[in-house]
Image (cartoon, rainbow, N blue to C red):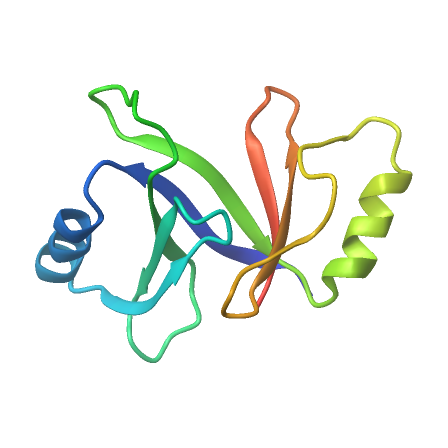
Length: 126
C-alpha cells in the first residue's frame, strides 16, 4: 500500500510553528523527534483520530531561508522500506539522494530520491 504520508516544511522556530498549527489549525502534536544528526528537530502534527497526511516541521535544516515558506519534501508511506529501496535502486532514471535507509530514534525509516525537477520525494515507513 502506498499513500501520501506528510509534507515537510522547513521552519526557523519550531516552538512558534507548533503553537501556530495547534492554535490556528487545531492540529495536534503527534510526535517530536530529534534527527540522528543531532542538529535537526522534527515535529509531526495532524488531526486526532485520523491517519491522513500530516505536516512535518523541520528546524535546523538551513540557516538561510527565504521569506516565503519552504516546502522541503513530500512523503509517501510504504509497507516495506527495504523492498522499496531495492526497487528504486534498480531503476535507471531515478537519482537517489540517500545512500542508505535512515532510521530515526523513534523507529521511523526513510530515504529520499529526486523527482524530475529536483524536488525531494521521501519514501517513509512508520
